[in-house]
Image (cartoon, rainbow, N blue to C red; front, top):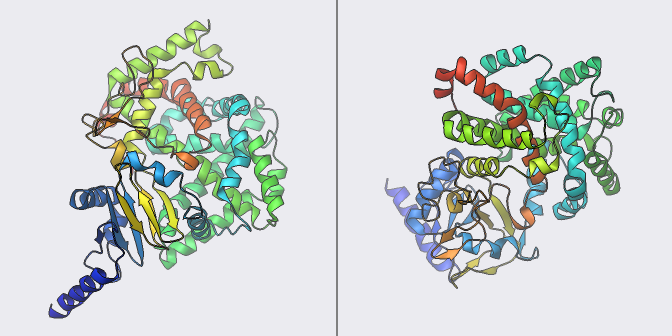
Length: 477
């Protein structure tokens, strides 16, 4: 079409004279106005891999009306992660997503200040109490009727079983129980019913949130999302949460934080729903992938089970005698840690994003300098590098359970790219000020859930009844 050819020629001519010196290569795409929005939204990993092959480890793409610079050199990530917030800022983009996804508007919101407030409630001396509460809540959900759990596995599949159990137990642990006594059957019944109601609504909403973040919901989807959020806001209302027993320090700290910000009682449940997604949305999928890899790799399953048996035997107990999981036990599982790290390396694909607040120079580790424009966005995508980088990992597309183990069974931390040791070689939890503050709690509950409860069930079902099912199990996007 002659008109399209003229438009593209004029665009290229304009770019030539409007671009700043030493800007990263720009790829606008071939659809005026949209740029690469469709390809980027459909499969970001495959699209960005093609762009890397074409342009190298730094480039700028047009996505609808936004220009996004992608940096894929892990040696240079510190130049983004620790840059002054006066030049690269996360809070502006965070506020945009909070509004789009959860209808949350918080006055004077500062994500870094919020992390400082909440970090202590999820780490260090508070970890044991969280782990103990999670242990009891898992018992409530998983041990009430093992035969029903087996039926649930078959009816719903491994993904829904993993996602549902993790979200419901995590919700009860952080947000509290219906009544105080963990061991009272009537209290347990109430927790099972209530947590199932929360999960069923949350799961449906979760299917819509990524499209909401990109402003891609249809009118019907917007109506559905509004109804689901309204129902969850009632379940997370100030009155309902105040009536809970066994509330975590995290919940009390966050409620106090919202009150100090001047957030009213109508907005608080919205913020609580946002935090439910932030704290619990990834644990279930992580457990699913970990179990799936173990079921498909018998050597990995045997190594993890052997390690667990040894840890329990050293305590002079059997599995049935355990009344809790100590932090010492959780810190004595290097094989499991390697399996989890390898699982997350293959499946976790977060973006680390910054808004460029002023024209600036970005200096890379090899000395190159690139100009970035005000109001553009800068993103790291660790899934492509380091996590799937063939220069760092041999056969990166394959699951190798001992990839993060040294010969003496200690954690392997030495990985190299370009002959230089990497500071960042696996980044499922983010890095720098973006490091997930709930990482240690998440690792603890994943280990407890897999090793103590679901993995023995999965192993038995796999061995005796469901080998064909495991080999043909469908994987979610």
